[in-house]
Amino acid sequence: MRSHVGLAGIKEASSISCLITIWPGRSADPSPKSFSTRPAFDWLFGSPSGASAGRINLAARRGRSLVGMAVVDPEGVEIGYVSGEEPNVLVLGEGSGGRMRLGRRFLRGVADRITLSGPVSEIFIGLNVIDSDGEFVGTLRDTMEADDVLDSLIIEDEQGEMVTVLLEDVRSIDEWVELSVAGDALYEKG
Image (cartoon, rainbow, N blue to C red; front, side):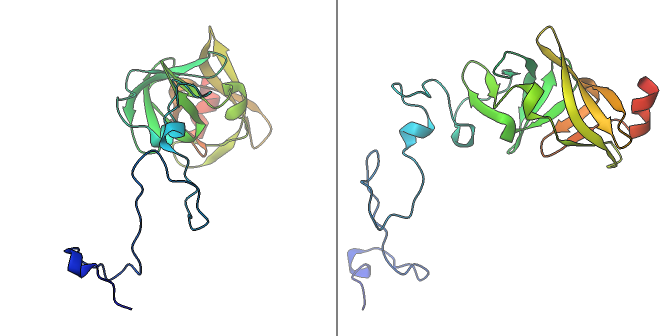
């Protein structure tokens, strides 16, 4: 069966088997032919009447930069301030640590500051820790805060010894914790 798309002045795409209907407006009514599981845009950007008012879903965020914003957990513990943005991480450049990359998977929302998905004393626990040479150091077991600012991480090494790592020695926190120092240097500082 040949369509009449070409007669209307529209080029026919060879890789598409049928036409797709685009509904202008907020959203189309649910249809048994709809395969989309995406929510309406007002949910992504926070409707004024909804629970997410004033907060933006980070995966769908558009607009102003996050640079300069504080990153805190829900209890108010500060991690640092954003100095740069990358697709999957925020680069933190101020605070108790030096320059550190924080995976966006730990972030919950943006309002007047960026909020983590949980308390730092819980969300980073259990992450594997590697040193600057890529060698396994141990597992993150606890965090230490000073005056509502994340100060250091407590790591259990392979021998079961607890080692304290200052936040300034952390290069990134994402799927694992990457240190900016060699594993041997951790014991020299202790």
